[in-house]
Image (cartoon, rainbow, N blue to C red):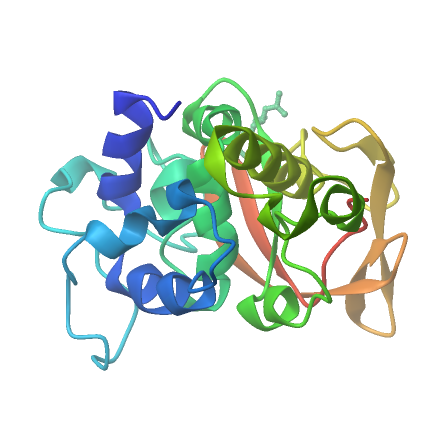
Length: 226
Ligand SMILES: *[C@@H]1O[C@H](CO)[C@@H](O)[C@H](O)[C@H]1NC(C)=O
């Protein structure tokens, strides 16, 4: 199911931060194989080293973006910066698992505001983003094993990811937009000096990157993706 392109892409953006954080999170008997991919990658830098994660040596120098440069970011696109912030490595990993989302973030001609939940928000979810209680009812505890199981997990992850991709950037205050998943409208407003994503009032923590095809917004919670 995974294409060469996707694998290369995963390699090119993987950082040790994601290898460190994503792998333990996925250590679960029901974890689909595809989500275990990072495990095969060698650590790329000292995990305790200070400062921002650096790209693996295999990536080309041209993908080295001026993070948070505040401008158009030259030729740098969202896919180049997604893996950089250690606080959102889980979400970055999910994006790598969904080819359509990865391709969108590589595409300089399609703008996106990525609403990337903090790792802590993903970890707090009552169920993993690839799990659907209805599927456990139907298929039992092996719901996410085998080929069909992987497909179900992939579909659920895709729904989760697409609920966090807003297909416009710049995104103006109050502008209601259907997410890439298409199921719900989202907008944001400023209240008491905080930017809140609505519905849900999920607080914007930081803008992790502003590049040619959009922005990465780090948010404190998870949008409704059911
Ligand atoms: C896409 O984003 C860039 C960078 O912010 C901006 O200059 C451009 O106008 C946007 N394009 C569209 C169609 O919104």
